[in-house]
Image (cartoon, rainbow over all chains, first blue to last red; front, side):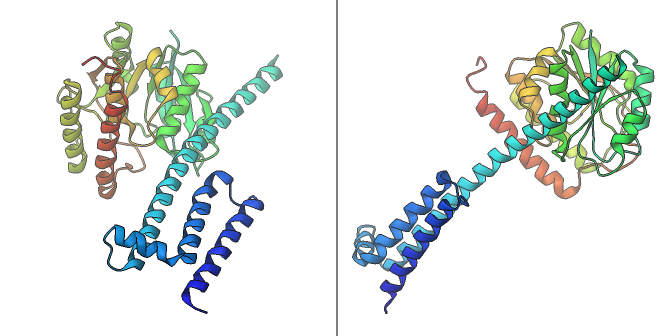
Length: 118
Length: 236
């Protein structure tokens, strides 16, 4: 078994894990698109290693596997940036909800007090 | 005129009771709302037991900006004409409320800031704090072409229009400088009046040397972003 077979098997496994996570609702579809795309890219590169070398030659990359590292790094940075924007949005929404809950609780206590004094 | 004093409080059980009492004594015409920002001590109970303030408790700690904004949301929904923000640690003297309000009533300003430095006062602060104040004064004079002697002061009074702006948007943390820029860019008038401030009665300032570095960077970035966001909304 050579490295190509191993990486094809690994990519297939990875893709299956992603799909299973979506099926079990552990991963929302909207956040899974990037992962599915990257799984397919990795799969294609493993099945046709010539593709990687072809692209490397086009970009004047001497050592083809380094292109793979570069793509992996690029992907990691993109997904991190994406996640940070998601966290920022969640943070903003959570603050608003906490504020609304506090104001509602206050209003409810006020109504109760009014009713009891009447 | 319906006026509200907003006091955000996080673990201020030692001072909050006295602060509420002294405000009510000096300015009984003001309603007081205490925003308890998920305190771990008895801030809420102490504030309630005074019977002089309305207390709203946030179920989690959201930080000074989120707590202050809750107060503005409350002010907007209950139709207040004026909102004044004051600290829970007794730094801000209710004797100056009238001076702040005068600026709003005369229409001279939409937001009045109580400054420690308009006139020479006895107030002394740490070197890092003074450096920060100088830096932000300079930054604000570059951007707004106006002079702010105490841009980090949290003793402020605002009118109905500004209450509405703050209820919709208020910075997360270190909001003082950013809000001046925001209001100025939106065309509201921000003015200062001289006040005396007391040394805090208990607790310690939230500004440590490490945090002050973050403070400078965060606030400068926020000011720059405010400029970008409001671009085109102001005449050149």
